[in-house]
Length: 74
Image 1 (tube, rainbow, N blue to C red):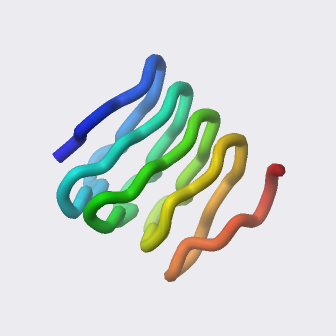
Image 2 (image 1 turned 60 degrees about the vertical axis):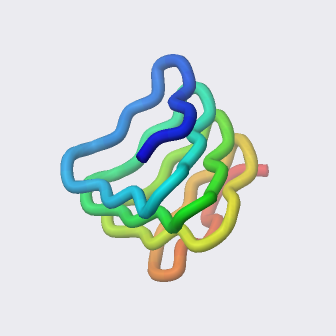
């Protein structure tokens, strides 16, 4: 369930949102990613396809992997 979806954000097909998730502005959640309950995804974030997000993600970064880790950005 999306508790908040920012302006111009995209949730790709097959993304699994495990409960209340907040997504900031201009963020993109890739195909088949998984986001745990009560997670905040910041603005200008890219979540790679198949990534497993288990903790909050700060603004302006790209995260990939299982578990998701920052690979680019501030």
